[in-house]
Image (cartoon, rainbow, N blue to C red; front, side, top):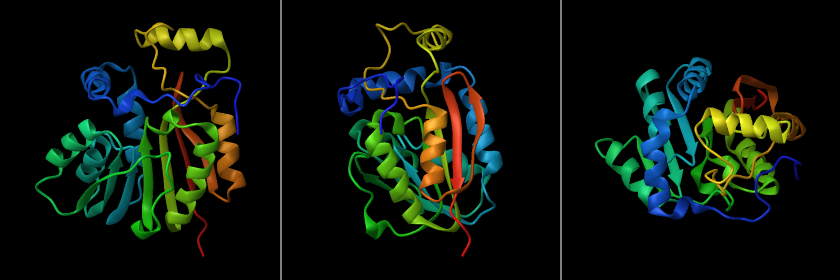
Length: 221
């Protein structure tokens, strides 16, 4: 699986470096319209109680927001950055409802994690290659209960180099300061992958430039 607008042909991922994670945590609140995407994701969340898997959870921000907005949320928050995991462990240290675990999204999801009502991710999956994205979406599908939902609040590819430059300008970046870990895929390509894998109600529910909320549902049985 490849897309013309992918940002990197090398499997570079700087997010294992503590300084890279720390920079993101400092800058996260400055990303325009990011909170809007999170708000739409929360709006579309089914009512609790829910078992939730957060892929590439970082410091646990999204899982924390979901737990504030939906009662009875339990589950797993996984990431491969030890810097991020330490923040997540601090965030959820007072509860046994969230397991914070080390997992690299380049590796298959463990079968022993079981099934989830919701699998979600926030600006993480674009750091893996397109072939792995597609395989991960298939693994997510297998981990959803019947009627379960996958939400991917994601950094996606622009349709043209000019629009990509416009996006970088809008977030205060340049091609030189852009994240070389990015491997961006288009909205259309990712929605097609989800449909081909058997997801239902596949849609892009929100988009601002290169930020988008994609989702699909496991069929009811």
